[in-house]
Length: 420
Ligand SMILES: NC(=O)c1ccc[n+]([C@@H]2O[C@H](COP(=O)([O-])OP(=O)(O)OC[C@H]3O[C@@H](n4cnc5c(N)ncnc54)[C@H](O)[C@@H]3O)[C@@H](O)[C@H]2O)c1
Image (cartoon, rainbow, N blue to C red; front, side):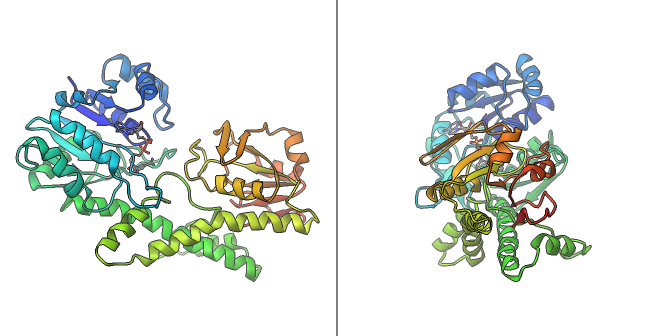
């Protein structure tokens, strides 16, 4: 018997499970990955935001359990769906996992239960995909069971905001569904933000991610322009950010990565097309951001050329390959595209990333090199792709022959440092 069943115990599901368990609820995690289930059973976490030290006591005293059988949802008061919503091969929304999870919940659904979708998705998914499948065995949403959408806002690796201190948006199918979902989340979230429908909640999440994608694209485009104008984009962005109102700082970089920002906007552009509407900001931002690894590869080539070296045969050491600082996640990381492009140009590639022991992308397979004197001094160029904390980039730059800094973490150094 559990108070809550969480389907999908990944970056989103496991932190939620821990937050509810710490607030006194008994949480049962259902996951399709037997290794993940076994690890949770042993109190071991593969998710950086929930340490094993935090998880183990919750498992030991029975507040968190895990299994692979979705029939366990029958025993829970509330069911939270936190499964992946990827893009298909032709970059269209793939809500197949959400639909199949709903289909496997349906035969076990009981009157009085609450079902909440947490996965990021296009407006309409809860009503058009989830609801009909859940109602298949005769129960009616809003009448026999409650249905809501509450998009997760977690930012893996972030420590200044937690599940509790991050306001949570909730939209219910009916006012009673909303009230029920708000009551549930109030246990472990300080501030709930009710909206009028599941569709509105779905769109709020997409707006948040599209806002980032568009603003990152804007500074990325500015970075490429600044290169032409011989201006330092970082100086410009930093100075603009001193404006106390009406400006929000975004940093340029080698491209978007992770599971959300490169993917989620296309959920909305796809949905918009169904309504004969083109979301041009989304497409343009996608185009600029997707181009960034290509631009960065060109910058590597130019930097080596200015030292009379071709890319072919040059030793290129990449620092950081995860998609952002201080996480080990390489999903959609622009570093992978950069590796592929430099490999095609014949570079002799190596990388160092304390969070990523090995990478395999296309025909390239690499393991993280130790950051000893040799690795830095022997490299023809050192590229700072993802600037993890705990690495002394200034000291590395002093030892390197040539540095290309995509993150603005080292000062200028007698012509040996170039930056985005
Ligand atoms: N990672 C983030 O930063 C983040 C933030 C906010 C929202 N989201 C959204 O939340 C959702 C989940 O993302 P995530 O990052 O937690 O993914 P994840 O890959 O880390 O975790 C998903 C989990 O679901 C499991 N799973 C897959 N299919 C399943 C099935 N049929 N039945 C049971 N379990 C299944 C997987 O084994 C995995 O453990 C996505 O929609 C994502 O866009 C992610």
